[in-house]
Structure formats: structure tokens, C-alpha cells
Length: 424
Image 1 (cartoon, rainbow, N blue to C red):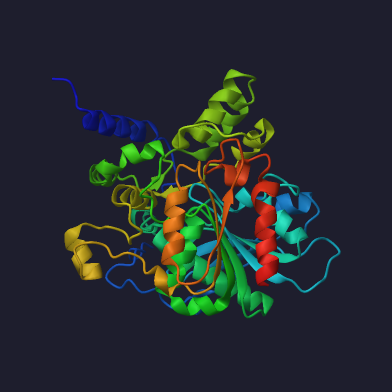
Image 2 (image 1 turned 90 degrees about the vertical axis):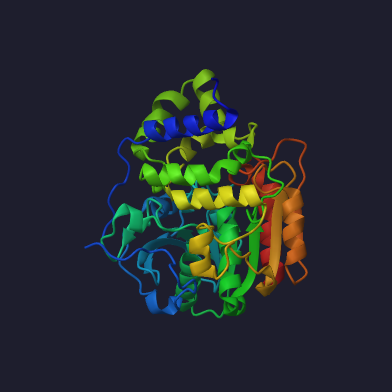
């Protein structure tokens, strides 16, 4: 009897996962402690209890800054649930001492702070905003290469028990408090791309008092409701419960399950080959959107040195849940555990009516993850008047275009800087 499409999908997924299980990060620093998920208490502890700075040597981000003449700094902070995060800072352009408004940049899933630097001073958002007069802070979320530590020695199952919910109410809010303390400012500007944008909204909806600490928030290609997403991954979303069981049975708590050095070698050996090699690597970056996007081959080679970064399997499952339901909800643990955690068999939606700060949404009609329809839905759910900038270009402008497109500085970034000026 021939396998059904569902069986083919799940079989392919299982095969890919098994192939990828070659030496990933199987231990995490810091005796084994309690699970780091939210458990029965969904409220975040006060981030001010865990924002003490730790010594931090130069990392790849600060080295990149200094290479281009920027005085980069690396800071390490502890979240309330014990994760140690690296925050990279561009305090000012060299020889500049002016008093600057702090701006926090939050990366997307599979990325890290280098997303905002890799394109260099002319097209990297971190550099552009520093040149525009802002004190730029770049957050590396828990689990990424520069934020892999915990105050306790946790087993992988415990360490990776988080989704973008925890990025919002722990990592993002801890970063805000730390930056305000370091800069002695009452408020910050904050920008999130994709998952980072979702994390901003989650942080503020779960802790509404943080509206008072945010001067303005920029949501670049936000992934909230994904009802109208057109990514091919939506074809797999109906099988999220089966995928969840596969991941649990195979003990896959994070992605990718292989050592990232393998991908770096692949980049140097394959992607630098003319024609076929470069085309293959381009297609790998674009496959989840269903089409290729225009970007420089030289930038692609640099990108593969930092992309993809590690992320939790729970984060992927949370996104599949959004793709399946079309709702912007908390993590779905299943009806029984939902009842314990949320007092409801279904996960509640995030209450966007609690967001009360100046907001700019940046989106594109050809974005397979953050559709223009879903962004207008998001705008309608936010209580204040929202600035919405739709990227208009005759070429394809997909989800990855927000950090890779050859004209990103004129299509997007100049509008972001203007909004920051207008709201400062």
C-alpha cells in the first residue's frame, strides 16, 4: 500500500532529523537544576533581580565593530531564570562623545546579533543607527553561540525548554533594564526583526509596566498571527502534534542537531564554487520562502559564517502552532497541561490591547512568513495609532530580504532612522 502524503512528510522529517544528529551542543554550562520553562507560574520574575554585569571578552561582534573603526563593547547579563546573555554595544562612532539615546536591536530565529553587522557599515543596521546618533545595543538571545551559558549545569532537556515566549518576558525585559541602568536613561528605543519583534510584543503584553520604559518600538517583519503566511513550511504545520512527538522521542531539544562547524566547512568548500555551488547555497537560504531573493554572493559567504545559529525545538513547534491555528497564542502544551498552566484547555492569545507605546511596523507583500494581511491584522489589534511602512520594490522582497537585500538601506533602514528621530 502506497504511503499517504502525511506519512511521506513525517517520514522525510524523521530521516532529516536522524541525518542531522551528528555532534551538536549536548551539554550546557553551569549540577543539574530545575526545568527552565515557565511551569505552572506563567508570570515572569522581576528582571531587575538578575541584571548584574559579568566580565565579557571581545566576541565576533565587537571584533567586527573594531575592524570597521567602531568602539565595540561586550556585556554579559543574567536573566531571572539564570541564562547568561551577551549584549554587544556600539556606544558611539570613534571620536564622538555626544549623549545618545539607547537603541536595542533584537534578532530573529536562527540568527544572532551579527545579523545587524555582517553587511558592514554601509548596509548593516547596527552601524547605520550608530552613525545616525544612537547608542546601539545588540542582544544575543539564549541558546545562540554567544549566549550559551547558564548559572546552573542543566541537562539539554532542561536548558532548551524555552520558546520565543521566554525571549520576550525574560531576555528582552532583562536587556531593557540593563541598558537603562548602564546608560542612566529613562527609556529606550527597541527594534525586533521577525521573532525579535514578536518577543517585544510578548514582553509588553505580559509586563505592561514596560510600556513606560520604551520610547518607541519598531517591528520589522513581525511573526505574530501567521494565518496568511505563504511559506512552504505551512504544509507541515497540520502535523505539528506528530512532529512534537517525534522530537520528544528522539530527544531533539534544539536545532540544528549538527555541529555548526560542518556548515562553515560547507560554505568554504561549496558556496565559493562558481555557478552551481553559489546557486545551491542561495537556494538553501531562500527555500523556506519558496523563491530566491536578490543579494550579493559575497554577503552570502559572510552570512554562512554566522548563520544559522542554534535555536530550541520548542521555538519551532511554537511557530508551527501559529501556522496551524492562525492565532497569536501562548505555547500549546496539550489540553491537560494547558488546563494546569492557563486554566484553559486551549492556550490563550496574547493581549495586544496592553501595548501602549509608539510603534512602527515594517513589512512586505512578498514576505512568506510575515504577510501584509497579517500585519494589517496586527495593526488593527494595537490600541495606538501605528505607523506602517510597506516595502515597495518591483523585485521579490522576502523575509530574509530585511537583512540581505542589496537596497535595504534605502528601502527600509532610512525610514526606520526617520521614525527613530521623530519619536526621540
